[in-house]
Length: 234
Image 1 (cartoon, rainbow, N blue to C red):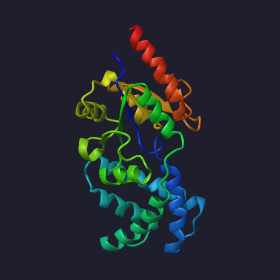
Image 2 (cartoon, helix red, strand yellow; image 1 turned 180 degrees about the vertical axis):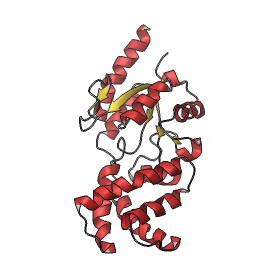
Image 3 (spheres, rainbow, N blue to C red; image 1 turned 90 degrees about the vertical axis):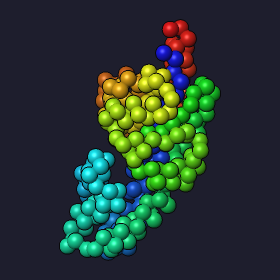
């Protein structure tokens, strides 16, 4: 089946979420009387996943997962929700100010367009925040439809997330290449759902046996050319 579309992850693939979170935390922590240490940053990262997972599963709201993360991180008696929301807003201000697209994104989008393919984004983030992130980083309107946990009703790595995204996009799974930095969520899960997949392994720390590895999104152009030639032969 001929390749027709590239389904891109967002955080860690198009936008440097890790750097923005680190910069945002280090700017925000002193404003609440906390030292901006490596240990504090590591603790913030460690406490967030269980609550994000609960939100992705639909058991709590997006605002509530933020409150629970903050309660765990601060380790203080539970303040009112409004106070937690105001405190978290301080972090968001600094986090959002640090949003940046990776410098290899424009070249990748150009290569995809040159190959005659369409793009879309599949992200486990919230619709409002992820669209805002794309707009703030200059990618709004350049990456096609944006599929999220909220508008699909299911999150990666469930194969159904990919099936629903492809269905809404109007493409068959075997016509789509998934590209992302999370090997389990963006590669293994995509292949299970019937898509092709490439692992964006910027740090070179991915599974050694992965057959389709990109060290930069600039490597996507040659991969698409090879795929196009294969499609024509097949």
